[in-house]
Image 1: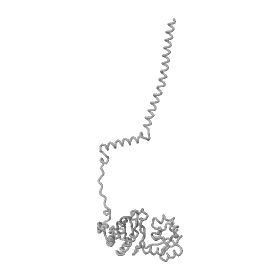
Image 2: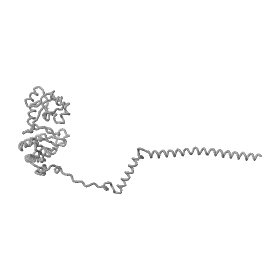
Image 3: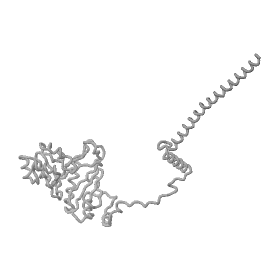
Image 4: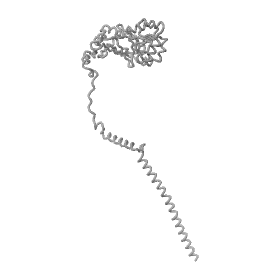
Length: 326
């Protein structure tokens, strides 16, 4: 009996143990299955994010660009470029500046030997003959100087009084008061005063060609510099328009005083008379201009001062003058 009881108890324990194992195993399955589901869900979420990405390296735009780049590199490797696939049509050679001019201009330009350096007298005589304009054109000098305008001492600026005049009626305004104002009126100034003249300048009514001012009144023109400066009307001591001798300044302006200055490329452009003056008067004026430019040569300059000289008219071809004429 005792042995039978022992066998029964062992059998019951074994069954209980098996039942416990069976109960534990479902727990393991329950705990393991959610982990697999979580991993799967995260992977699907990532794939969905990649599929619907709007920016970054996985966006549709970025993928398209990457494909285009790969295709372009493949074409380069094979030597089949787009340029070779579609060759550009042959372009016609551009016409020169002379070819683009009118028939009359080309006929007059043919009279000038571009390989020759003319004397000043020959150049002026030829310029008057090759003038195509129907109006009384201005004779011009264009002189290239070997200066650096960025240097203060090489920024050439001065005035010259043309012996034969400019051929223009010069209107002179004088900002002065007292005795200096009366002297300017006697010398032939077109406008003289202070308040009335400043009021015109403030309204930008600039009905004058040259403005002369006394040193004492220059401070009142400071706020008008942005109006006068761009038009070249701001008085300046170098040009002789800031002076106490207003009578002399007016006389010189009326007689044909011309201001010249070098531009940013080192070239002086100046008109020295009208074609109607004739060759003799034009030659006198041109010689005065060259002498004035030579007189203001900066002492710090190294190398050639005058590098090229050209004479022309308002609408005519240019004529090269020998540098030795300067």
